[in-house]
Length: 259
Ligand SMILES: [Zn+2]
Ligand SMILES: [Zn+2]
Image (cartoon, rainbow, N blue to C red; front, side, top):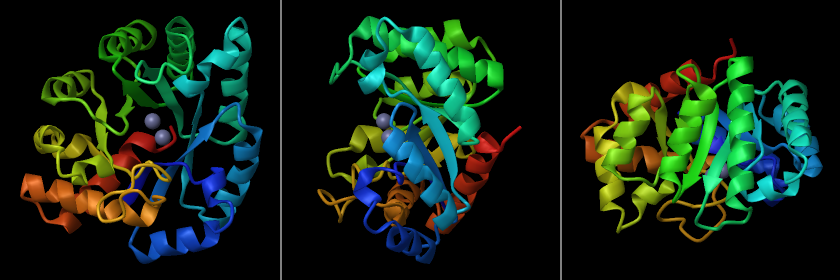
């Protein structure tokens, strides 16, 4: 089983990273994509420790839409920061990148520019993208189309859209990744979307330290809990959790394997 999206190099895990990784291994989690914020030097330094403790983890690096605003007026610096980080961290993907019109932490125009330049970078490097999108569906697909052409592949992480949006994501060749929200009581529409994603395009994640699944809801999340997501999705799809875990592991390797 894999955790396709977690923030293990974040400060929330600085105290007990070894124990967190031990628990993940004990729970059968054999790999993870650790998401790095390209502009966060503390997190980038901590990535070295993650690499030592958990050599099976791979790294994605990008500028999150929340932090795009710090690069307003200096977009070339955003591109340089990500380009350098991708090499230094041997990144397997560009991400997480995208648009967040729910929190609007950065001006939308800047979010769009920073997103587009990172999609272009992914295209140049032949790397997949990890997409964060919230209340910005139309602009997200438009920018992926304009900046990525038909060439860029990736994953919609922590998918919270409806069935129509899942179909759109699948149609442009993307994977769809579900997080602990699928275990929440009122997430019926989301479980419905999880039911229709073809097996070979499905991924699961924790987004740790955020969004802990039931019964850990409200606490710090960690990769060991990704099995709860697998169980919830296997349940709505009428599959065995073990079979689903194997399938998403293959999907993960196919998407994030370095060219
Ligand atoms: Zn996100
Ligand atoms: Zn994330």
